[in-house]
Amino acid sequence: MTKLTHSFNLTFIGICFGLCCSTAFLSCAQKKKDKVESPLGYDLSAPEKYNMPEALLEISGFAFANGDPSKVYAQQDEEGKVFTISLGSKKYQHTKFAKDGDFEDIAIAWGKVMVLKSNGDLFSFALEETKNKETKNVAHTKSVLPKGEYEGMYADVIQNKLYVICKECAVDKGTKQTSGFILSLQTEGLFKLSGTFKIDVSTVSKLSGRKKGTFHPSALAKHPLTSEWYLLSAINKTLVVTDNQWKIKNLYPLSVNEFNQPEGIAFDHNANLYISNEGSDTQYGNILKFSYKAQKK
Image (cartoon, rainbow, N blue to C red):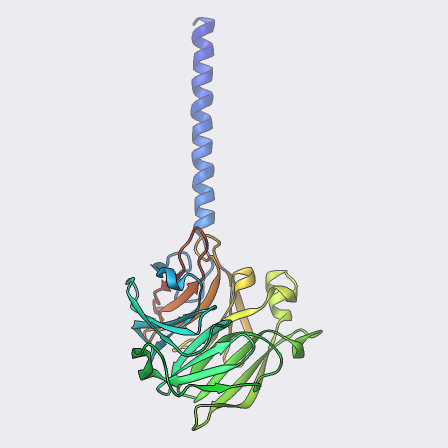
């Protein structure tokens, strides 16, 4: 064998070995990347994506009426409008209910639409008015919640309660807790404070290895089958699951690729999970659907 041939063979073997190692490394890396811890019944790595129209680039909350996903009611955080849209469609209609402001979440219950402003103010009006370009008879509840910043709200139709959770409130300063408030609807469409709840944030710190400051709830929803609470923390892209007494059971980091800025969460009547994300200069606002698969006993 000539020196040239020997050199060529060594080079060829080296290239093949390098390719094999690279392929094996990429395969392992891909498997590691694809492995995402998810709540029981869901696969957070395999969503069905629905891009929102430009008007909902900054979608900050959405809700279904009676768990029916055929129609989505949503709002964005700059305009006092409620948008009605079907998933997968670019067509929508909107209803103006207030002046522009920082609106963070929406709930549908008791034949009403309820919208949460970041300062804790609540707006409510008849669901049927979403067919109109502008609402009438809007009830505006002011100063019922402590001073703070609020982004998450959930209406429990069965319990007849409205839950609002602090993103950052003065009452929690210096503590290891996040406060939540329970409201009841009055006949005139206004809300009255009827209870409170607390979440021990130190558990989040232990599970994530991060400080309390990284947990600022941006949305919450109640699982229709298990009664567990699902809470989003947009600031560090985390999904937190608690039992029905607000004791934290687990937390799940959300993929940076799929979750640009998770701001809204809801379940439909089949327990499918939906999470909305605000868009950016390079991404549409979207709603991600995670189909529920019942576990075999």
